[in-house]
Length: 211
Image 1: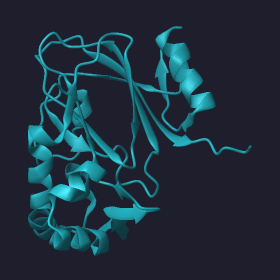
Image 2 (image 1 turned 120 degrees about the vertical axis):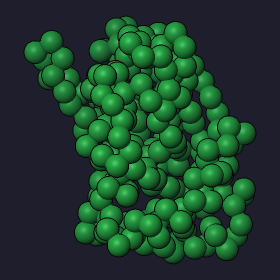
Image 3 (image 1 turned 135 degrees about the vertical axis):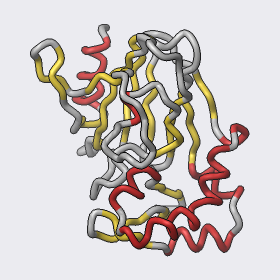
Image 4 (image 1 turned 135 degrees about the horizontal axis):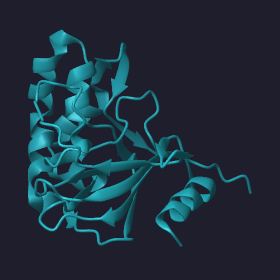
């Protein structure tokens, strides 16, 4: 099965992709993620980190949408020779590492992002769900909340930055990650400049089971 056929199969049978792009003049249900030589300026929210070779910290994809993706599919076409490892952390493994009062604070805290209340952490049928992409959250929050948000989330960000608290995997060509985007954060280590690293990526909503 080709990479294209695999991505189409996942979109049709598992999780309906809302990602689309044109590849070789054809509309497809995924986009191509690679280093496009953009320089990262931390204060510039217009730079998409996934299109660079810089480190991409653990995050939720489409975090600031009203309904984030349920599933993110990352299919390795070509990986970098040096670096480019994928990072994974389940929030339910992270919660026990945080003080209980801090977890309660996160469960009840609401930020104003894109002019609507933003739920960062919630508990659904006994399982924690998270929405976190600090760069986007800072870009789209109220200006007067930025500094406070950074202070309030520092403990969580510090725990997530510790390599002891996440899984690292380097995908080989034709290997794929299917990530639960509601409970798991994913990211990527930096990789060498000029790399031919290419991934296919789709963001999807689960197809309801009608049986």
